[in-house]
Image (cartoon, rainbow, N blue to C red; front, side, top):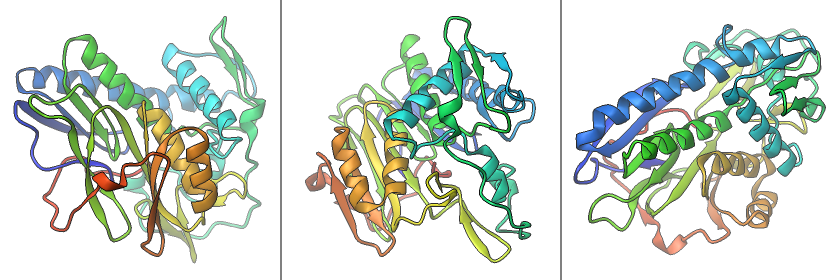
Length: 327
């Protein structure tokens, strides 16, 4: 996963907590660390309470159960849904926020830490329909939304990415900079540590790892090696290809994308991984971003203006913040 490396830079403190199914790490000035940790933890709890499909009382769970009716949404949920629909349109549906029912069909019906490595085989069913995002209706003036009957939302990694971006905005608003927020590999920075030209972060690869400098913006990694389980005799993972309704089998092990925002980097990484190496590279370059793509066989390549020459191989990696699941 994308991680900040080693100990915090000089003058910065570190805090971590569990939220949204992963470990969230915050780096901020030592004298403001308590404020930064409290603000970030509260923000992530609000986002999880609003967006988690695993909480039956969450706002998104209530929306998913609305049976085709228009529902008034909070500003947070409306913004998350509008952003997810924009991403679906931009990726021609390769990113699809309406995969909740298919996730449940393949056994991902509870938070991953409660799922287990094996679950009983399901009675065979045709994959739940995908592409239902096209039928979602938004009423911006009244801040309302209507989902088609039987359609539920799963924001997945874009929710984490948006929360990272929101946390950095909130920290900056109260004068807490420089800062880094890492939600299990979805990482963004604001400002630079004193005396440093960049933040040093670690990048994953299949059998490889590198250190690289990040001056601004965000990195997000999507990969298939962590959130895996068996449903009967069928191996599953959590990245569904909406074109087939099944876990992606693209030949890619992970994709790390760089963008100005963590939410955009998350969508780009996930989309490229589902598309596979050649089409994934084309997609990244078409939208003007950069990425590192690692294949199942251990080979890797870059896309766009990714700084290959700045990647420093890591062999003996020191334990670092950011342990968690990849989106």
